[in-house]
Image 1: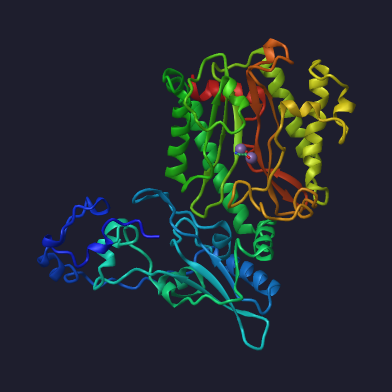
Image 2: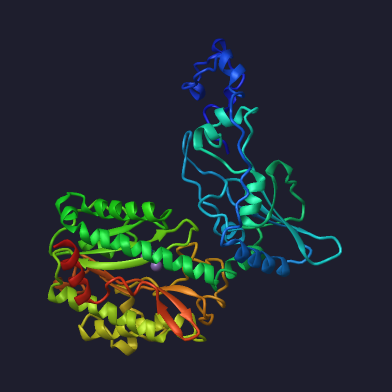
Length: 475
Ligand code: GLY
Ligand code: MN
Ligand code: MN
């Protein structure tokens, strides 16, 4: 899709200017411009950089796809620009599987397609990345196309440069012919599932990128804590939390991996509160769920819940430390070979037993934990405890249940542990002192052969650590 307002003005002269609504901002080009715009540009040296660090890993992933689909022609599109309104698009973000298989990430070109062409007489594929390389300056594209013209959006890549950078053959998108029997990502179930499951176990490049994303996120959380006085002073302090984190994610990474949740007071009980238009009030807790996405598109997904005034009240601390106990139990349960769902079950044991002790359940903890007849405690934590994490915040979403929730934990898997307790402001089944308190603690975990490693352990977690953190940075 071209959202340009200018690209069809190439041959237009002043006399052809129109008043139609679709062209109401056109600035017609005079003949002098048209006669001279293609000339007077310095030669651009062809850049053929050494292959980027991810290239060898992406090649191994492509080899796995090729081996799984012998004789099939496969198309993995990056996706297109998506219109926001009129001639304004959303920022482009390549399909996660495309990025995984090419290593082309925040710098990927919209409309690109990775093609696996089966070789005649053998099982392998010739693999080519098709994309629209930059137009040369004898064409109108570079000055008149607001979506892709270099005059508008800056330098764009050439075929040779991308081939060297990514270590894959390249061709112009106009040379790509669709075939009747193509298997296309997102249309073909088997291909979509395979590439999703291919991301369940991360390679060493991916693990390093995940740690990088967590480290940027940790700095973003430090920034929020350091800015607490200004956050409290603003009538829409939640927006300031979001903005402070976004500044760090943008300056040290590519973006945020998902919309930041800045949920103060009772907003913390709305699990995906992204409106972020509330005040941040001393005496309340603020739940911040945020993740920086680095240039390779890997994202962190971390939650911390902070006492706005710097110290937890007795009831806030009791709830907070119970959530931490559930998180620690989940971490202890996570071992190579155990089922992914054991992590959630361990957290639920703690949550059910504690809320039963507090007298919040109409049944015993054991009855609540009964798989068929129970579940009463889930009123206070309706979400799951863990999900895979990687290029997507909810990674590997098309993997089969047998490989995911009911599958074994394996070294190289990266996933969250994120229990919570949420007592809605209008939940009259709980004593008043609980109402309007929401707590989640979310960490990003790497499974290794020796057990789980908490990639985000450096961000204060315990109630005491959180209080000391606020005292240190925002006093
Ligand atoms: N930030 C969304 C989640 O924690 O899954
Ligand atoms: Mn999460
Ligand atoms: Mn989260």
